[in-house]
Length: 75
Image (cartoon, rainbow, N blue to C red; front, side, top):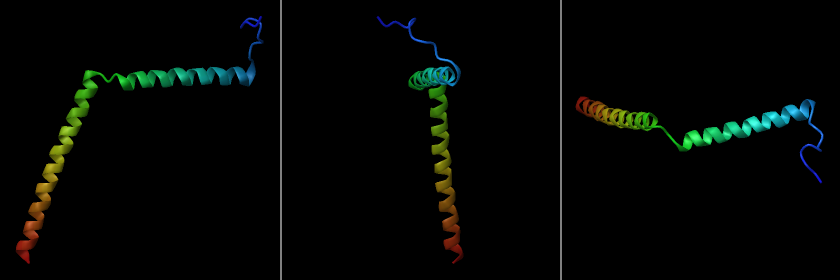
């Protein structure tokens, strides 16, 4: 019969590495859960950033058009 009590305990570097690997697995699972379930405020913040980016792009397009028109008038 093989149970966990009969296996020798890990010590030293092996124990440290096993503990670190377990922490890494738990942290990855927590990050995945957090990423999969974005809060309402996160969704709102992303929507606001996208809206501001679209507005900035529209302003830049208008400004570039105005600059091009002014250059053409000078020629």
